[in-house]
Image 1 (tube, rainbow, N blue to C red):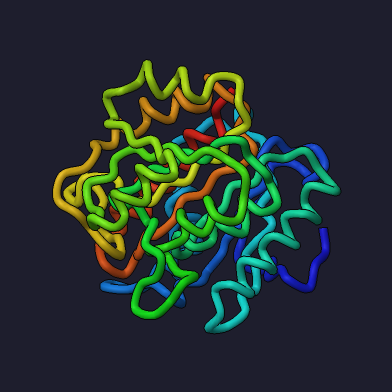
Image 2 (cartoon, rainbow, N blue to C red):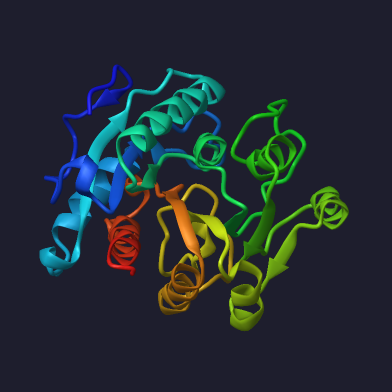
Length: 271
């Protein structure tokens, strides 16, 4: 696949051509609205490096790595619009399920615009439904709200432990469904046989497991709990796309990139 929007220099050696692959990996190295601790733009490269170090059976994996999108410097909305266009090109050439490597969480908007899920499963320490943050309407702290406003879908959030009163009121008004990680049966019933998009902000994990994130919050899921959730989600529904976002590799010693690479492998080996 050729596109003016792609930088194909930094990518894994693909196991299949795009037309034959089960999954299409795409990096989105943009973090222009990230606050607190920055650096998610370096996520795609470091996640790939960590992925190469994992023990895996290559015969069980079918993916094509498209490389990284060329972002519109300093503009997350235009970058997300470009992402939506690029994913349309991918869909025209292949039935591969896109997996985005972030990058900040705002990139989910661009994926949802094109992939049109019925349900978005939002694994995150934060609700991300602020109307605006630091005078920005389109940013990583408001992206879930923009998704609800712009697209006809359901939003299920798991792992949220930080939200304002305004966000709580908005979520109740709009029917945002929030679950604890232990609510496996309820989550499974909500997503059964539906087309879903799975968005994972690495800060959903306990900071002791994934310290290299933009906005760490005390508490959070263990890695084993998160992978159990993945199995429930991936086996109970039709996944149209997924992302792994907000990993900031320079903020730790490679631990978060390694965990993210393991989550990527979980998706790639799902049936």
